Length: 130
Image 1 (cartoon, rainbow, N blue to C red):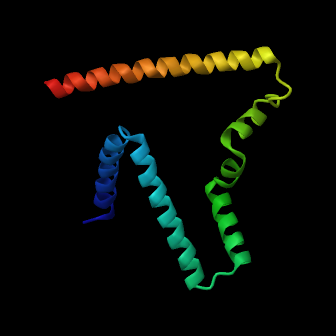
Image 2 (tube, rainbow, N blue to C red):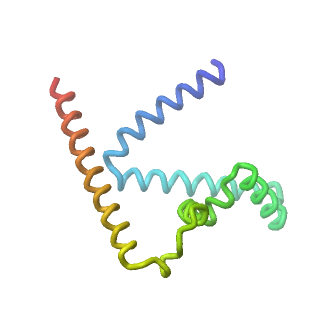
């Protein structure tokens, strides 16, 4: 069995599991949380087992995050970076009207998303009945 087959298998498995778990967001959150904690616990223990010092850990971690492009977005957040690029003002400097407009847009998007979810649920029910 080649690497491509293994990757393809896990890709399909992920799609199925994610599809099922997304219907139960609280359970999904617990499972993801447990997986993340166990993963990082393993990384931590390996670093301890090979006597990786604190300074070396920071250097290797920072280089890895910088190379993969995650360092800035993870620590600053994508919204902060994007707002800086497009020249948005800080929240305190925005006028009240701008904030209200953004809130209205967010509510409209949430409403649209809810309608789309309801339609998808309806389609799912029709498919199950057939």
